Amino acid sequence: MTFFEAILLGILQGLTEFLPVSSSGHLVLAQQFLGLKEPLVFFDVMLHVGTLAAVLVAYRDAIKRLVIGGLSTLGDKELWRQPRETLNNSAELKFIGLILIGSIPTGIIAVLFKTELESFFDEVRLVSIMLILTGVILQLPRLRREKADNPVGQLKTWHAPLIGIAQGCAITPGISRSGTTISLALFLGIPAKIAAEYSFLLSIPAILGAVALKIRDVGDTSVPLHIMGTGMLASFIVGYIALRFLLVLLNRGKFSVFSYYCIALGLTSLLIALIQ
Image (cartoon, rainbow, N blue to C red; front, side, top):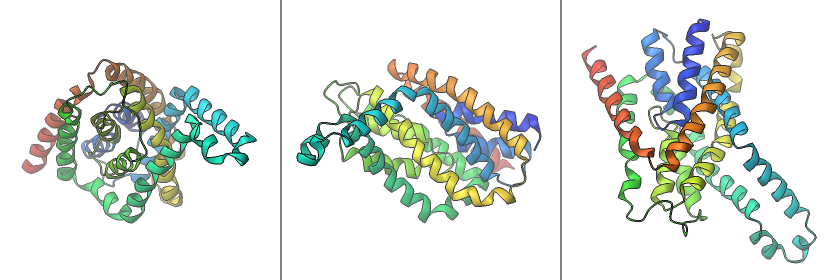
């Protein structure tokens, strides 16, 4: 892999990780187009680390609030006198708990179906079909009668495992993680701002888990570390910009506009794959 290819894939990852169009699906198609014979799964994971850094920077205030608020509650003397009441009054600990609950089904799916899911990185036709499915999923919020930014909408405990399952299914290349989780959250009536914040903070343990599962393959990767680092840097810079752009579109109710792109790309790549 050359510097140019690493930068190109890094830019592609940064753009597509946060825009609801499936970063892994685009990487599969791009690697196929560039003529890379092996599905570079570990390189794909490391590009996700670059976009993880973008999440940490973009949501640094929210992360700081959760950490400080959570530690403050755990250090409260009232916790030992009235544990249930104290914990229920901590919005920060509740949100952290929901992230942990949502991460459980994602982790289970990743561990149980790791080998099968990785094999999909070499299946262009399947990826194309999954991109079409992503386009359909992005239309899901339109099926809800009430507006998703209904002020009475809240992120509830039972929402977390459902969104976690959606994130786990999005490990399949071609299924957008952000598109699936945010679309489901909006369909459940969760306000757009909270839906986005939960989706992207939920991605932190998911990406860390993916890196942990692949870390043993470091010695076997065919991509030099300096080239891999270049791709990661590109994915971080472009990813941060794409994340900010997505939040603007989400607040304007334009989230589902990417549905048409996913369906068009999926149909086009599927047609090309069938012809070849």
